[in-house]
Length: 342
Ligand SMILES: NC(=O)c1ccc[n+]([C@@H]2O[C@H](COP(=O)([O-])OP(=O)(O)OC[C@H]3O[C@@H](n4cnc5c(N)ncnc54)[C@H](O)[C@@H]3O)[C@@H](O)[C@H]2O)c1
Ligand SMILES: [Zn+2]
Ligand SMILES: [Zn+2]
Image 1: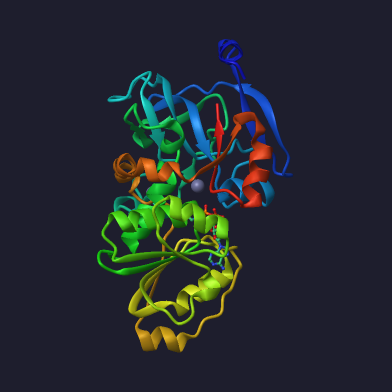
Image 2 (image 1 turned 60 degrees about the vertical axis):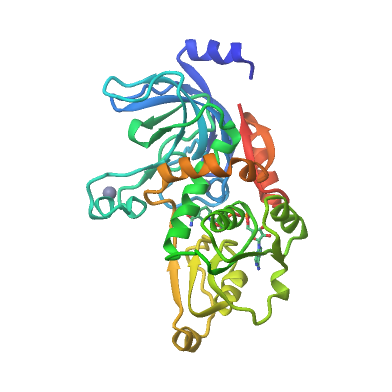
């Protein structure tokens, strides 16, 4: 889409948006440009990343999704309008958005665990996402970025925030031996962050030689095929594959008194087998990590420090209006982070 036709359609009060219907069809529709409320901003997306959630919305449905869905919750862009009550943000600001719109008042929100808010209404799931010419976000979810940060890298602040929550949940990685099961976007970001936070030794296990090679380029020297793991034990194990076999194997790899952080999102009715004697005998802790909690501002800071390493993760990038093709490429699983560009 040329810039001129973009402004033409906006001038008519309409914009193009990717829409996914409940019967799993995806198309580009002309819809009204949203008007920001008093406490909201209107953003023109610059880059957005696809994630497993987008594929779930496309193929099966995802808890909380409201069809037709305009997908994409991982994005960066520029503010084009602000509501009357917005302070500290203005037109032209380069921003990233915490997509999790919460009530702010329930017990979980007040406890600093907004990811567990029962009224959670995420952008790109329950409200329109960034695969559109414009997207609305609450000002309190919108964070100004350095102009020098690349738009595609900035679109990875959201997954990085999830990673910071996971690493925080591990109760500390400093000087500890870390294993990350899965070398996709999440696994690689976890490994990079553990490295940065002073972990003793960080190993990525992934069956794909291509993924192990990318890990090497992102500065993770220790990679292994999970089939070769054997009886080695680690103080902290992150399961970031979302695959049953990976979780079962992860439990076997935890050292006495160690921690398993489960980051992978398994099917809602999935069951895994493990030996409870082992949990007892070794005094293991198993901790779930769901979304990003209150880590978005921290992720903005950390991304400034790891931008070059994170850039290695960006895989194929498609024009925004080729969402279906981008989703296919992502499902093929050969690259790391598939993105849309505008
Ligand atoms: N907890 C959260 O907040 C959160 C946020 C984003 C994504 N996720 C989940 O994290 C998981 C990983 O996400 P991603 O974007 O990196 O996905 P991805 O598909 O890019 O990466 C998964 C990796 O796991 C590898 N893998 C497959 N089988 C394996 C096995 N047996 N052992 C080790 N590795 C194996 C694959 O080769 C792939 O590289 C998914 O389940 C996703 O839904 C969780
Ligand atoms: Zn995501
Ligand atoms: Zn709440």
